[in-house]
Image (cartoon, rainbow, N blue to C red; front, top):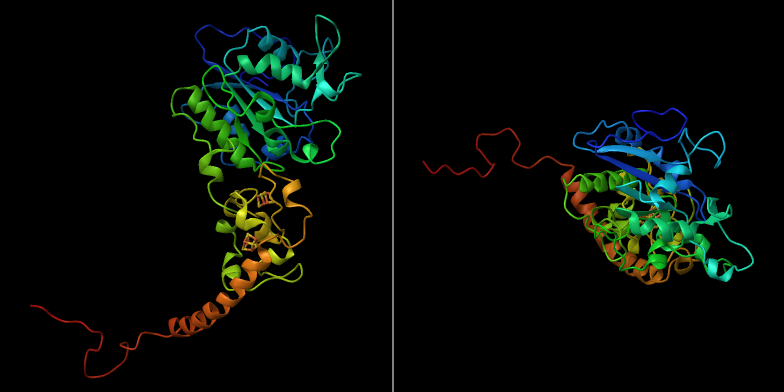
Amino acid sequence: MTTADTAVGTPEPESADEQVVHILWMNGGLGCDGDSVALTAATQPSIEDIMLGALPGLPRVEVHWPLIDFESGPETGADTFIEWWHKADRGELDPFVLVVEGSIPNEAIKTEGYWCGFGNDPATGQPMTTSEWLDRLAPKALVVLAVGTCATYGGIHAMAGNPTGAMGVPDYLGWEWRSKAGIPIVCVPGCPTHPDNLSETILYLLFQAAGQSPMIPLDEALRPKWLFGATVHEGCDRAGYYEQGEFATDYGSSKCLVKLGCWGPVVKCNVPKRGWINGVGGCPNVGGICIACTMPGFPDKFMPFMDEPPGAKVSAAATTAYGTVIRALRGFTKRTADEEPKWRHKGNSLTSGYKSNW
Ligand code: SF4
Ligand code: SF4
């Protein structure tokens, strides 16, 4: 959707002196479009703020996103949505950010057909696979942004026993892959991704495209460091219960959920700290165990869900023993902290400890 003109029709040529960054949003992979849906809930910033140029210093942005694009439609139909992809393929769209949602199946194992794709190849009239689009567009993109755990690491489609050979974008392009601007693949995982984590990363990349921010800092799994540097546990509202060795044995309890299967202590995700939407919610904060959906090993390495994670028994036992002592000490501290200091009283002398030195 263009910010200047949302009318249905053929793309207008851009004026030579106007810096426009296009965002091509490809959700032809294996996925549920949950990350697109999540982005509509972003508030810090909202996608509307980005698209409508409400943030100072941003380049003009044109988003070609099936979820909301008024130009959306079939090739050679009433509109020309897919033409933006063909323009990018022909090298007529520069610069553009390529957003990939959904995992990439291995088409090499599907010689009798294809797993997923979108649009047709004008040269042959045949459907274009998602992996072919990635082959064609990734070398021309300013940056490739993989959103959601399917696109980043393969997700549910890539779990053991899957028939498609699905994988994440870094598996497909290579973990050391760099865009023509020298930028690594940027991964914002989550099932779905956190709305503000995604909008904030888009914002960062746009500022980087405008030359106003340094290279985006990424961790070893290509996640933005400032968003994925801490564990769920470190931001969890229930962490105090964990430390005190108080564990829920059924849902509905406000205590720590580790014995119900929470993986929070080893999972990198800021959702409990940030809240899900507009600062509200955050899986364990509101009673849901963390199932590690932002992690490259999700889901296989964290299954079966709702079993006590390995290590939880040991650490919970240690925490229970340690927590008993802590609780006793805290009980004492709480009682004394509930009382006024002793020097606050009537009398003939000052007992606050004040010493005059003049
Ligand atoms: S509920 Fe999970 S994340 Fe929260 S304190 Fe317990 S183990 Fe940690
Ligand atoms: S807290 Fe756990 S389950 Fe919830 S979004 Fe983060 S990684 Fe996923």
